[in-house]
Image (cartoon, rainbow, N blue to C red; front, side, top):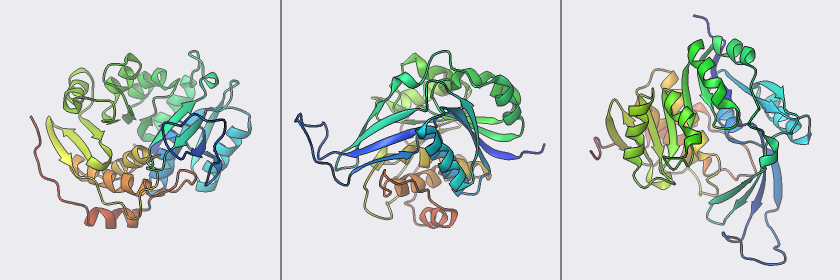
Length: 309
């Protein structure tokens, strides 16, 4: 079958205003002087994944709702500059936006504008179907209204991945994504027992591969029932910001996996791409290229397996 698109990204288009704080939580005061300044730029989860897969040579297309507003213009310009196909469905409530407070250690607190989405939002079924029909793979961001697109994607036939981010393992909002994807990424951030959550995803859903990222501790890979710890890659420069690291990990993993690499090898690619992302200030948008990624994987620490139960 002929595929015009390697990775179709659904959802997660938006704009972040990045504010570097002297410390988090923010000390209460009448005012704070902020350096290196306050920057508004396009780039939320879907944008970052699309940027990452495109920079690694995968033909990428992004589908989401966008407003006719300055934020929407920033998102359109980002895709234009990087040559990424974009199908923008009109969103009368406006383009998604957030304020990211970033601490000196690179940790962040994101404040999302909840007025720019509604439970009734839908990606037109005919549009999803037409794009999915010419796509090898679909990466579904957990933003509204992507859950409703999952059955259409399943029917159309591409493999599906999703990122549950800091899911706690029980919030029902994430379950349709967790259970209908073939490949599930999530963060260990809110999990007391990552392995238990990972195994439950494979038991209850379709996923054959689950990857839980653990920041400086690397990642955990559950594939074919076996859990493996994948050590973190050494960042190529000082760590300045964790924003976008999970999206970069997903892009690196997908690049290897869609080129036929086994899951463990793909996870090593993910750790290198994720470590690279931590060296990019969140005020900028830059993805790792294929040569840099390959070089990083060649020098990445070895994996010892299996791990745990």
